[in-house]
Image 1 (cartoon, rainbow, N blue to C red):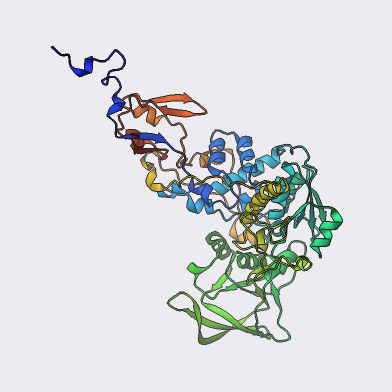
Image 2 (cartoon, rainbow, N blue to C red):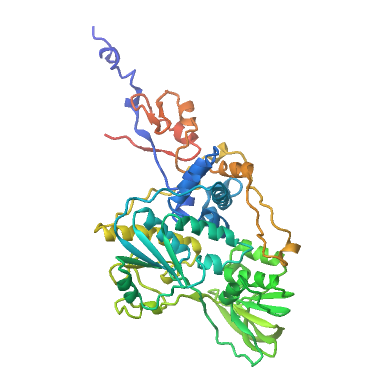
Length: 540
């Protein structure tokens, strides 16, 4: 009499014991790209430093930021935080206050005197950085850590670029800018101020430089062809913000700002602090089409700034502006209506964009600017070997955060070029989307509200408007992170598996599946809060 098949195999090898053989799909652990990381122009590993901050490991979290961005205290205040716009937590309640936690870590580092890593051994290479703004100083920081000698030439009396001269002190205190720049200088980066570069090729030859990174900020305001009488006072927003940093320009009682970006908001709010009783922003489109950050617009309104939407300026004479009403066509483009009115104004501030001064390139015929920008490759190198450029000088968004990202990437590219290597780009993981999360595991925990300086007091001082987090709110905010797409060892898969097919490896490596016993039921995928497990077809 034949025995049943299930008991003909030796002990330990029966199919009844290894139930994984019935499986058609298997679960695998995956690493997905968090949307915050994906959206960060500076290239920060945001999810990782939030994870480190969750248990109070603040210095470790700060060091993780510093791997990409040497200005956490600055960017925690001035960044337009696209990471928060992309944050999946908004599907639960509100986005994580990433920017506020970054500022907390940056301020804690300054208070505690934490120092960056020690630079690598000297490579014997010498690199020139032109411009001590966010892009230039970031490139200098990374190049120095890689062991290169770095010298920064800056045309202004003090380093900082648009961090110092383009963002008002009520948003970005000057002592914060100075402290983070001083920390870079302490690594051995030499900064020479009031050192304008008029002829790049001659400067490179005279200084014996092996490469150069150009990060000349867009500090020249664009002008509009506005007919003006002899008494009209017209100035650009960049000049106003620069002068307000150390002087007190008198603008009169009524100031009009022409433009709709963040610089326009800064100019209008600065005008109020300089004594203007009325500050009016004139913008030719509607509020929802305004490029300025919504928070900046709201703060400006709180401070008494007025807005004239769908309006353009046709002339300025004898203290009166001619305002023409606009309307939007089907494509959203503004067009004139022929309807005019008068707006009394003592000064007109133009906030119509900025451009960089590229005259330093005139002796390099192979570097031909196009539309006021320097053409560069993916490695940020121009047509002239060894000359790289980033920030406002190249195509792309003109923000401090983008400039920092350019500086970091360019530093790596310069290092590879000096070493004769081809820079390899890492493979990007698939993006973690809200659909891959199981958000029912996360309790509602609204974002921390940071105190603001009372609106009535703001217009009489350049004191910082928005306060930072303290220890408890910083911890709370960091713990709101969902760890999208990456295992944070919550033990859910381990606890819910009906076949005990999930094994704990160790703290560094998390978990592993024992496929001898995993039946592929998919419960672990359904119960993983962060979407770090997926089902794949069984290998045949």
